[in-house]
Each structure stands twice: as structure tokens, then as C-alpha cells.
Length: 422
Image (cartoon, rainbow, N blue to C red; front, side, top):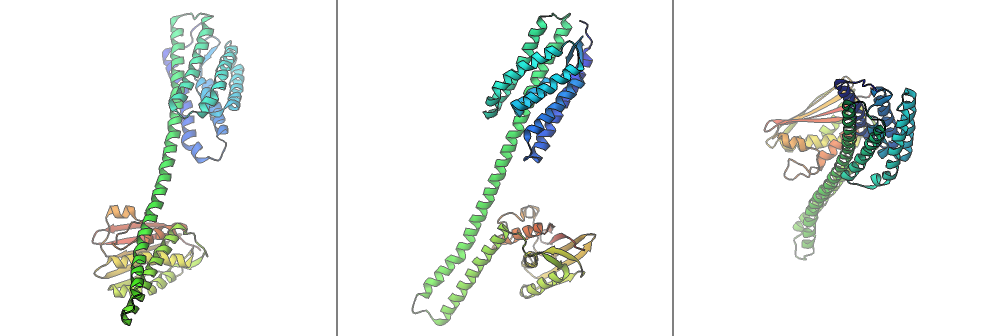
């Protein structure tokens, strides 16, 4: 038997083979498995493993006459372990068929070799599937690769190698095969573990958000209810003057209205889905909101200035759109504690309607801007933060974007971008 390979060729072939296998499984677990979760995972595993096996066998080397060496064992073991017994049978048929097609004296050896490996994995698949320990799964894969190496060394021992160089080539090949199997199984399991941890973190964040909102709602609603309860207790006293009685009644009604507004804001955040969607003239809707807020602006010594263009339309629910604009404009008015000008710029650029609402109030820091739209985050001492959350959700439901620019003690600018309807 004559050696047909040198060390440089052998090293290059190993790197090429391993790169095929790793890249294909990396793409599968990082992209395909996450994107197509409802698709048959076993079908993807069979496809990726078959492609890896065929590539490895197509770019193999002949270390001695009739005996073709490559890294096909790596995708075969991984494909059977993760795909199951039926997938393993498909891979075995594919591998052996292609090996007989390539020809050579080692074809029969290949069949015996992979029947031994498949038989071992057949019995280990239930253990592999049920265990949650990464080390145990790696150990099963390690033993499978080692069984392959031992079985082939036994077969080759029946026909002694012509020199030590060939023996060295075989030993290096089997060691790298074992390491390749162990590395890829460990990579797959760590990827799955990281995905599970990420999913748990996301769920915990959701629960944390719900908990924070519930706590804030409970706190905010309890205050007006406590005040109302106190006034109602006073009203039970027979000697209260009539003017005081009326004052207590008015204050109780105001506090109950405040509690109702908080609950409505929460419900709008929890379920912001648009109802009656229609074509809205942006300029006309902004004008309507300005008319509503003008008395409030005058009380706070704020002028509202609108620069815009009529005839620009977007799709949305009128009431929700008003609520969104009122929240932003009202916050801008309240931010100008010493009075000022609230400027609203409205225009159409391409297929986008741009609305810029600018104040010259107290402004916000970069940290405050990053937290806008998060549960119960407000720059006002008496604010609940729910209004901003509702605003962000409404804009999102209208398939729009919202951006914020702000400088402390100079002012804030909100930019709402919506798609124009022609």
C-alpha cells in the first residue's frame, strides 16, 4: 500500500472538512432553528447533516490505495444523535450509497464501521434525548467517536500499515474526529442553553414589567381613593357647614376622576389596538388638539405655534391619535414651568408624514430619554408615566416611529413619523 498524501495536504483537508461541518451547523442553530421554529427540526438536521457528509466525502484524501479518509463521521454522529433513529437510517443509507459510488477497496469497511456506530447510537439516543446535562451528552458523543476509532484501528490491524507515517496519519485523524464531535455537540448544547436562559430572562422581564405596573397603578389609585374615603367620612358629621360639604363633594369627585384617568391610561397601554381606522388629515387633527389644549396652555403662560400643510393623510383611529398628540403636547406645556412657546412643525417628506413637537422647557438627560416609554417612568413628580407608554404604543400600532431629542434646561423635541396615504 503506497502513501498518497503529505502533512500539508492532510492538514489542509482536515481544516476544509471541519469548516464545512461547523459552518453548516452554526448557520442551522443560529439562524434556521430560531427562525423556523414551527418547521420540522428533524428535517433540517437531516438536510444539514447530509450536505455536510457529502461535502466531506467529496473533498477527501486517499491516504493509501482504496482507503478514503475524511471527517464524515462528525456530521453522521451529530445527525443521528439530534435527528433520531429514522434520521440516522437516512444518513447511513446516504453515506454508504455515496461511498460505494466513489468506489475503492474500503467501501465494505465503511459499511461495517458505520453499522457499528449506528448500532451504538441506536441504544444511546433515548439517554441522549432525556438527559439535560451537557457533560453527559458530550460523553455519549465522545464514546460514539471513540468506538469508530477503535473499530477502524482493529480492522486496519488485520492488514498492517506499510510505515509509521500512515499510522501517525490515522491517529491524528481519529483524534481530530473525536475533538470535532465533542466540540460541535458542546457548541449546540451551549447554544440551546443560552437560548433557554434568554427566554427565561425575557419572561422574567415581562413579569417584572407587569409587577411594576400593577404596583404603580395600585399606589396611584389608592391615593385618590384614600382621600375620597376621608372626605366621605367627614360628610357623615351632622355639623359640617354647607359650603364645606359642597367643597368636600367636589374634591371627592375630582379625586375619583383622577383615579378613573389613571385606570383608563393603564387600559390604553395594556390594549392599545386601534379600533375604527380611517383616513386622517394630520394638519386638521393637530389643529383640533391645539384648540382643546389652548385653555390649559394659557393658564401655564404658554403659546402654541403651528407650522404645517393641509392635505397630508395617514391611517389611524382619530380618538387614539388625539390622545397621542395630547399626551406629548401636555407634557411639553408642563415642562415649561415659566412659560414659553410650544412649536409644532408638520410636513410631508416623500411618503412620510413628519410631526415635530418642540418645547423650550426643562429638558431631559440622556438617561431619562432612554427610559421613556418604559413602565412607570415619568419626569414629573406627580406623573404616573402611563401617558408616555400609551403614546409609544399608539404610534407603534399606527406603524409609525417616535424619536426624542432633548437638552437639559433648553427643551425637548418629539418627532413622530407616520406613513402617508395617497
